[in-house]
Length: 140
Image (cartoon, rainbow, N blue to C red):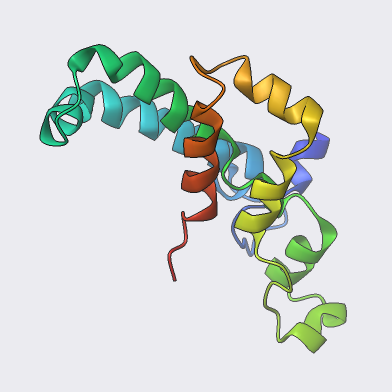
């Protein structure tokens, strides 16, 4: 088992969690789904909002980067303890003391991570769209 397989995105009752329940598996699956949706519907989405089709590659970079990093904030002992119902998390009623999407958002403010993220994007301003998508992916 690799170190990344110990990080979970979803709860699992199995000793060896299903791939989709691991953080790496979840991020890869969401990334692939985003690519697939944009390949099938991206042009229609842009058209619906009055954007030119030439913006599809830019939209794809923004959405797929957000998809690939949206839950990176789950990579911590507190989140894992919440999923596994660790008794040390009972004080939080097994809830997140700090929402994982905000940890992901904060992580993308580390200068080295921002430089890495911007290397995938067409405009430095596109990172703002990625950050909005990450921060708002759980609207409730």
